[in-house]
Image (tube, rainbow, N blue to C red):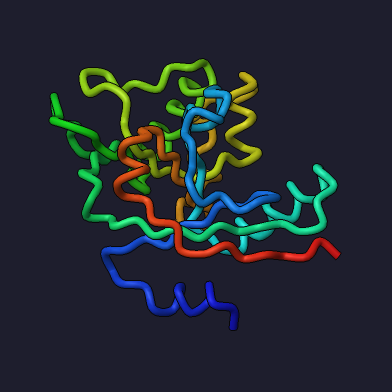
Length: 194
């Protein structure tokens, strides 16, 4: 078992182990390096899937010609994020300070997620009345979501084909002060490309 595997098995309920796959270790993430028109807007992207981060690291290493991929492992205290959930429930009219945005795993939450991706890809990341979230927790866009973004389907058309339990989760940390205070680098796991 890798050292990271030990982290996965020993994680506490309030602590998230998050992974970033690249061709280099990222010890001090900079949220400004992303172009800003990605699925969840400008920010530092992570996933709670170690396997997905490994695949991303190896893909990135092959594209850049690096001899190794690297999975940077981070810890985030979930209690440090005041979460707002979008879906079937009510969204608060206002919030004080940095907040996290996540989507319910029902059809209303999935529809809101697809709509949010469409808005973010146009550079519109603020939530009406609340502003920009410091952290966004959502699923990684699928081929079905790409159909909506390209105008070939509607979000409602997708609902029979989307199951939140089968989707990979990603986190986009968008506020540098939040990252500096709450995201803790744990280790860099090196993966040979050959």
